Image 1 (cartoon, rainbow, N blue to C red):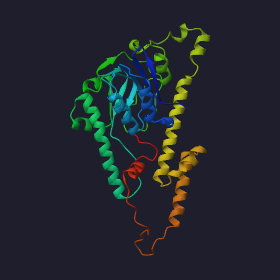
Image 2 (image 1 turned 135 degrees about the vertical axis):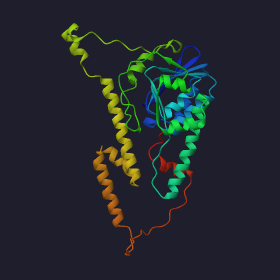
Image 3 (image 1 turned 90 degrees about the vertical axis):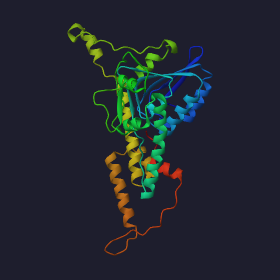
Image 4 (image 1 turned 45 degrees about the vertical axis):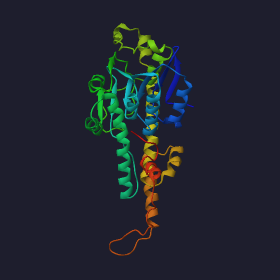
Length: 336
C-alpha cells in the first residue's frame, strides 16, 4: 500500500522518518505510523524529514504526541514545506533545521459543518479546543506567549527559515535545497505566490542511502551552460518534461478533486453520494448540478404550509454528541 511516510533504521542506534505527502492520505492512519515507530526499536536518535502540506489534524496530533513521548533525541529537517498540521509535527523536534528556501506555515484549524445553529456553535467550540492543543505545541517549542501564537495562526502565517528561527519555531538554518516541484496550495487562504517546495522524489533520492548522521541538504546547483555551448543532442534531452513533477501535479490535482467532491456532497447533506461521483470521475460542475437537482426534488417532497410565511414542517433534530459534531465538522478528514 502506498503511504505518506517511511520509517527505516539509520546507523547503529538511529531511525529516519520521511513524511513527504499529505498526512492521513491513502487510508494510512497515525495508528500504523505509531506501530511502525515502535517496531523501529529503541533508537537513540530520530531524524525526521518533512515536506508536507498538512492533512488530518487528529492523525497529526497523534504523531506529534508519539514523537514527544519517544525517549530518542529528535532532529527535524524541514526539507521543503511544513504547513498546517505538519508544522505541529515539526515542533516535536529537540532541534529543528530549515534550509534557507524552505517554509513553515501555521494557521487556525478549520472544518465544514451542516446543521442547525446549535451544530454551528458546537463546531466552533470544538475548533477552539483543537486550536488550544495546537497553540500548546507551538508554545512549548518557541516559548512565545499564547496571544502572539494565536495571532500568527489567525493570520495564516508563512515563515521563511530565517523568520521561523527568529520566532523560535526552528533552531538553525541549513544550505538551500534544490527546488523542483510544488504542492497544490490553493486550499490555503494566503499561499505564497513565488515559492514551491522541493520535489518529493528528488528529496527521497537525496537521502535514500545516506547514513542518518551524514545527511546534508543538497545546495542549489548553478545554471547549466547556455544553449549555444551545449550540443544539439544534449539540448534536446534536457528539454524533455520532468515526469516526476508531472506525476506530483497529477497526484495533487486528484486529491484536490476528491476533497472538493466530498465537501460538496457534505454541504448538500448527501455525503453518501461522494463515492458514486468519484467512481465515475464526474466533473465538479456536473456534481453541483446533480446535487442541486436532488435538493430541489427533496424540497418538492417536503410539506410546507400554505400561509404567507411558509415554514418547513419537520421533526426537531435529535440531540447529538461529540462524535456526531466531529463527523459533521470533517466529513472527509480533519484538516489543519
